[in-house]
View 1 (tube, rainbow, N blue to C red):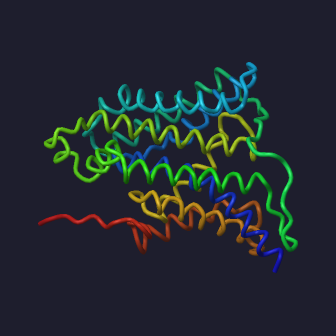
View 2 (view 1 turned 90 degrees about the vertical axis):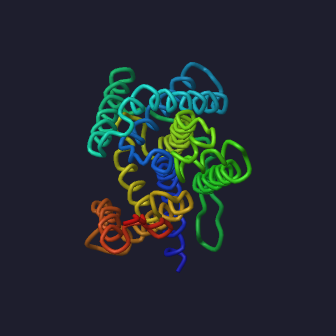
View 3 (view 1 turned 180 degrees about the vertical axis):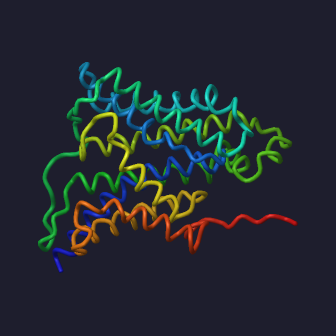
Length: 293
């Protein structure tokens, strides 16, 4: 029983990381209707900036704050320079643009920092709590806490601030929001900036667990897509729940399903994506699209 609970705890820790990147995917989709395939690479690039600042002697938490600010500004810049010129284009064109951004950011990171693996400091202390034979690492508890704080701050932003109200209005109906005097283009840029910031948090959480190099977010992005698909691409709460469920599912499958093991765990999120698209395309918390005849 203790071993099963241990696997659940580890799955929650992994799922929280997937949830943080899935949140970034959902934020962009809610405001622009775009599935950003470059979200993981943007998070990776921001993590490299944090690493560079730390290497330059900047204290970790100060470097993290500066990185989040840079990521926020970078996300707004990408929306203005890359996305806005193709606003209203066919969905295939938007997919190609984000895939091109994926390649560009990945190549830029490799050119600037090389493709060699680098160590990234963990923001959490080492060690673990021992409760009835179950080890709760401070890293896992920290990751869960960070995701909970991010989710809480987003809830407060959307629910209790004028900016959040404007963002909700744009996400619901951009045309009506524009008639009400809301500057839709500014809100869309703000949405991209916010998603880039949340993605940067995900990158900083991933790097100490895996490694820091330009391809580190590739696998995480697949799990994040599965989480967003399961929870619903228009539901931030669904992204968090989906991330936790996917994390637990792939951990338990790797531990107890002999055929899968640790080598085929990547098949779990793919199975989740296919299953959800077949039986509930809008996800567990998403709303089905309604079209008037």
